[in-house]
Length: 270
Image (cartoon, rainbow, N blue to C red; front, side, top):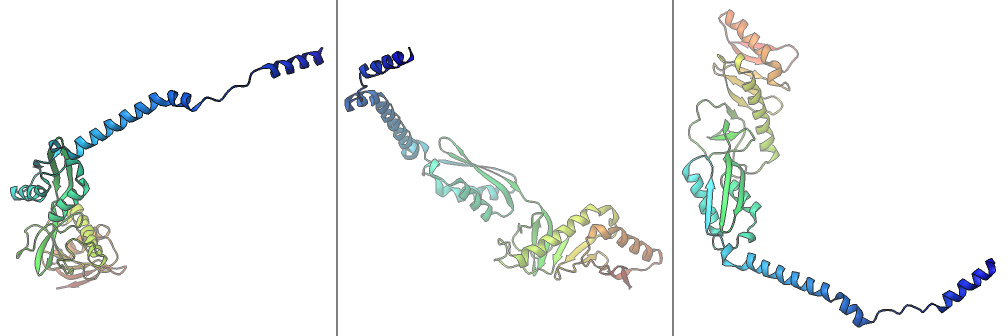
């Protein structure tokens, strides 16, 4: 029975007609709707591209500036971006605009430029706040992220600690050179420690940080006392410094130098 069944199946296979491959015309007819659909999409894309990139409707006509600070700052930013007027809003490099603003105004940070369709560039920013000042012939205000945010000033800003021992040049104002930036950042870290321990030194204010020797920064109190930190953090030695100052006060004396470079502090009285 099995042999008969196999013979029968072989006969059926032989009689089955071979499937014919579809002709090129049939293939084209089947693909035609897809070709038309792709063509319509392409035309729509080109039309939209032409509208967005070449229509005067999307040319920049206004620059809006929203931020704190002097009016002249906002006016300066508006003038800087006015060169973009009458150009296509989508063709502008937004990051380049933001970088240009911060180069022109180092006192600003987090500058953000938005496209406000159809024809306006909108600018927002934050103001850096001075937390200390560098003395180098003139005085330069510095923010907590180690950016010089002012032009040279002939006199120091009251209430801000002075950083000395760093030479400022126009080249270094905007470049984070290791020989300039690293000492400045270390001085700022010391000033942040001083601010954290303000309650200990309310009467004996720190008025200057000399960072000429980055391995042995020196602090000066308002009364002229020099404190040499060596490799120590100010916050780790603040209690010891205050104890020494108070002991000398109890004897109606003052320190000329408090040297913390060694295990035991060395005090040179006046």
